[in-house]
Length: 86
Image 1 (cartoon, rainbow, N blue to C red):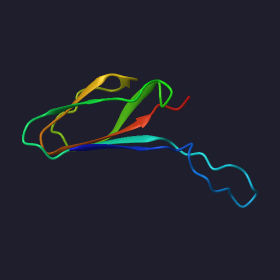
Image 2: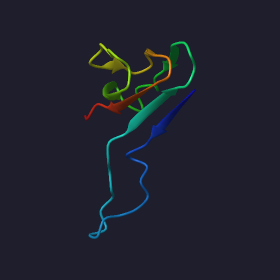
Image 3: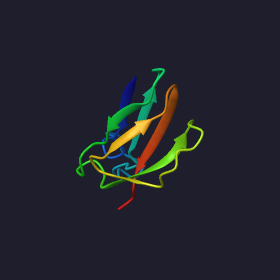
């Protein structure tokens, strides 16, 4: 099982006008284990709130999570969270 953070503010490229490219940041939690696993969300520096955008669990049940919260990811499932836009 693994969690991957995709930093939307860490894109080094520029657009055609030379402006910095900024996108949403995501946290992808993959649980390949046969039991649920708790993942700890990053601190507020990475996103104050996290909103689920993809869940392969039968019933994710929560609309958003606070920074640093513990998130349970069901067995053999994926949860993708987006940092709430400020």
